[in-house]
Amino acid sequence: MLYELDLEGKRRQFAYVIKHLMQNGHKQKDIAINIGLTTYDISHIISGFIKKIPDEAIESLHEEYGINPNYIKK
Image (cartoon, rainbow, N blue to C red):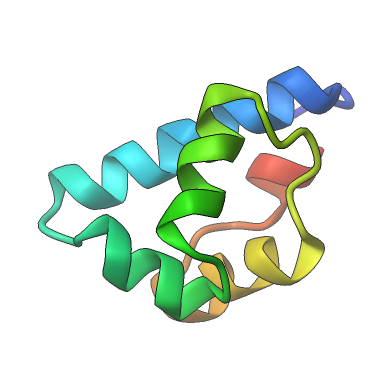
């Protein structure tokens, strides 16, 4: 990405990544466990109820699934 995303942009990118993982056979519960969140946390980040995505979760997406952390952070 060539520009900084605001919190809403980061949330949309996170939601896209989670949706992509689920479309490829991963269950939301397993994703949540693997990135140190709960399914409640994921649902509330996607809906916008929780605004800030923990950096640890973004790093875990990289470690567990090979997702470039800059895709969400930037």
